[in-house]
Image (cartoon, rainbow, N blue to C red; front, side):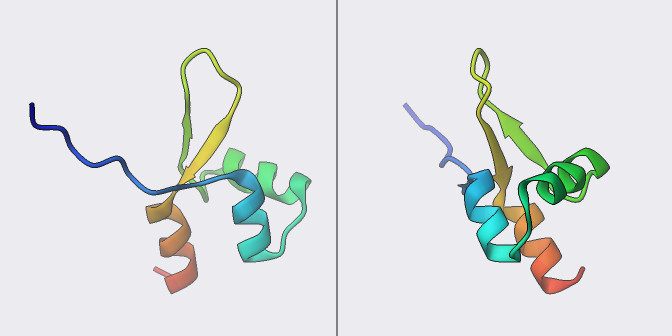
Length: 60
C-alpha cells in the first residue's frame, strides 16, 4: 500500500506566534485568503498549510 506523506500544517496558535498577530487579525487573514486553511471533517479544528506560511515569510 503506497500512501503519500501528509502535508506539514500549523495550528492557529503556531501561526499567530510566528507572525506575532492577535486572534482577530489571524481570523481576518484567513478570511481574506492570506492563509490556506485545512479543516478536519466533523471537527471545528483549523490548520494552516505550511505552503501559505512559507509564502508569506518569503514575500512571494
